[in-house]
Image 1 (cartoon, rainbow, N blue to C red):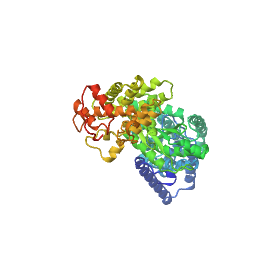
Image 2 (spheres, rainbow, N blue to C red):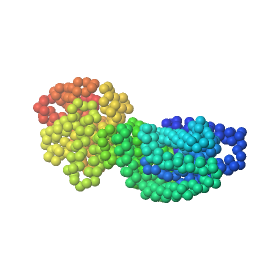
Image 3 (cartoon, rainbow, N blue to C red):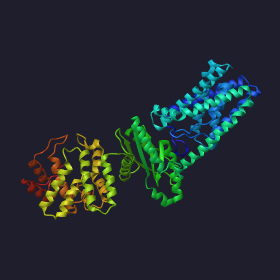
Image 4 (cartoon, rainbow, N blue to C red):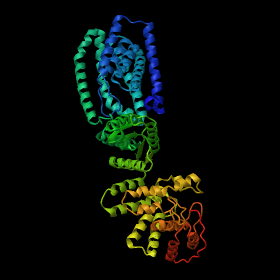
Length: 604
């Protein structure tokens, strides 16, 4: 890892940048050697210097073009093409490669500047080779040299720049190249005609090229005005603290990327990133320090894709061309990179990420954001410093969070109850386990004589007793054989997870009953080893109803028990695992008599 916690280029990007950089450097060395062994006269050197100066000035004011992910185009193309035709490919390398290097003075990323310079060097060499068969002073040959040279230069530049943009943005190369041609084709054609005029006038007399000063100056002034206007527009779409796109820019880009992905048939993933416990950083170090952390974090996020700051400590990253798995890998890489970085003065920080991927069918902008936000909420609430991918049940949880802030208690209960279907969809029980346990628990509560409100609360809590299993890996839930000790410990966390999910929703005492529905009558259950009547009655009822339904349902590792066999097993374990009164109420409700043997614990 390099200083500042930055990692090297991603492998896919390095596979493009490194070879192109080495080839461009090799071409530059060859050009330098050619100059050394074949010295030019003063007039030639002066001409090259003049074209270099003009190209460098033009490079300072590129024309940003809407619809491409590069810095734009500049009149440097005119002078570079002219230098190749007038003085050979070696001069084209000098003029083409030196101008982008001037961007280092503007503190642009060195890797980007180096790559652009290498591309210009390679393009100049290819252009020089392409016009070699047309060498001559006749008008037709000069025309061919400029047109062929300009086309070769443009083609190489287009291919290599589109390639690095496609790899960096994870977009199809053809899509990027096609967009670039549509946007830059006409400007480059016009600049090729300007290069032709420059060459013709220069060949007559370098001083006659001054006749182009007026037209080129007009183009440059228009170019500069356009650049300033577009820069002002970009500033209006940029977050001033981090330099990332702001909330408005994010929604504009997302809408455009969605349209492109649906039209071209490639996936689009959205990753929302939020700093864990950022309030503590502000409280401990102050808001200026917090702002510094945000700015440093933005630098790390730029390496993952096109990043935006949505407000506060929440960021978004667009990942065109990445499916769900590719987006997850990218997000985990971001989390690892940030957790390994030192962000003074806070030191190491962690972030959580939520991912949603636009499928083939039409998904609106707001819906995609809602899905990613739901996944982010899941990651924040249940562990932090992790990535979560959208699932339909996560949307329900996010909706619960929204409802929890409202005054409608009945709506909160209805929303909570709807989660039972999501639980059943992931668990290995046959049929609607949560629904069956809910109905059975309400019948037991009625048999025990509790009041009507408590019966309905029992029904709701029973439907949500396995809510925490939404956070348990499916390979554990669906494992056909016995669980390992580690897997068992993971599974036994589901009551606490379900409790945390319900605690903030204002549906007491449902959350408490869900937390304790695996406590045993003899005090050896989990999570708090409560015993006897310390265990809430609702939890004791759910425990019995859950065990009965599990025993009378088919499992992948055993067949179902009959009703009589299940009641007999519950009776055998009453007084150890189960409340005897609750087991008796169930037996009465089902009209099944039971012998009451000595208590003997069985595995849960």
